[in-house]
Image (cartoon, rainbow, N blue to C red; front, side, top):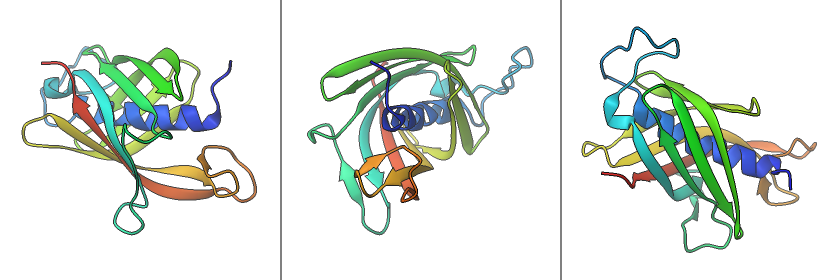
Length: 164
């Protein structure tokens, strides 16, 4: 079954969060064409919370919610990534690449889908928050798609480090 736009977009957001963790103030890896790597971001991250309209409506989803999409992304020091997405009991796996600056990350999946956003990493380097804008269809109440009624919605996605 082909993943929907909603799944692809949410997966990318989660991956961006992971990418943000990999970038920043770390040493420059001059041999890597994708840019600098912050070694503290390399690792495995999992979605913890998804907030649409942060600061206003705060439409929040957590793992306890049936609409929550669990994404686990592993960011590697060669700027490659792997991910696993579980949505309504169905799991999809994939690969891609990432790049990041001190404040912005970009994730590109192997199908060519790409997403960019800003990020912050907590002092303990265990919580990554990614801020991006995603298309939202109020008619179907889903993220993704490109219908005439689709609007851009600010989102914040939190990831926690699940490796040591």
